[in-house]
Length: 495
Image (cartoon, rainbow, N blue to C red; front, top):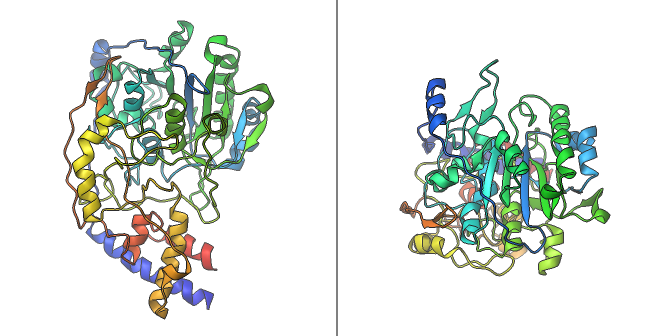
């Protein structure tokens, strides 16, 4: 009986998913890949600046995230060098990537959504989509990125190979700021997108920004190698920093991985919090609170009392020590059926679907509203999408609310064949989408960014009250890309 029930659901969802697959057209962008000679010419004209500020936070004054690649949790945890690094801080045992492959995870970590991206292609999100940079800019907090072997400051090409052996080296997909026009259209912001040589200089000059993104090259991050290489690199990179008084001074470092390696497993990634903001009594401990890449944005918002983006940053859990300080109770998430291994049907996956509007009426976990500049751009579109019943997986009420929705979907499907009401058994709420948009832009002074208008289609996404795979896709449970996650969900729930 269990087999026949699961088969019935999987068969129906498979048919619907395949039908949707035949009608969608992936949104595409023109890639930029300059020749070596063009790179040399552009490098001569590139502007590089040092930008530092000193805006005090509630728990930390500087946040540094270091990105590694494609490693299952246990493999990273068991690697000796990574274990040593973990002994210097707090191991986050319940930290989740959001999807596969790499690029959407980087994208989401600063914008609060991955906009249904399901691959690593060249994409460029329009100017009306904001990032953490806009929130920091509004408070006068400096930010920047350091990308190993970036050929010059502000380089926006798709990749740049090692010029001696032509191995993969720098790649745009691992540079989240490069994915947003709201960032790249501003020359001052480009001037703080730098390489590791500039990191060493800024460190020596004591001119590091307060919000820092660090990405090693494709060898050192484990993408083209393995966790042994990445572990050794991480230990070598962190050892002198942990002894540097300037760097350590109330600095919080997050070392994390973009995604796990085994797509069929739950997408948890080995992550560590360390640095001067971590007290000695917490070193070598663990934290089982549910976190994901959206927690990076939400924690910055809570720490510096920032506005929010109106996307998944609104309800993401924040670092426990910070939550205790600001009086926030993190959500206790049941991850039994959570996988996070595929995308949803949305803007980058289907060119007929509009950009989801940010939730302009939401408040974040510390009670702050959306950045006013975002609200002014998106207010009309937000109202239009609400009226049109436009829903996606990026809800602002529960970051992982799709877990409840998964059960509801199953019960509704079963109820349709028995005449019973699924909602009578278990209710689930899919709320209007929230996601970000961009407005303010950086120098040290902010200038308003030009907004690109995007209209919503009332037929772009089914209402949450509708039954079938469109509801499941909107809930983020049934991926738009096929059946593997559907089967995983069905068999996990009912076999």
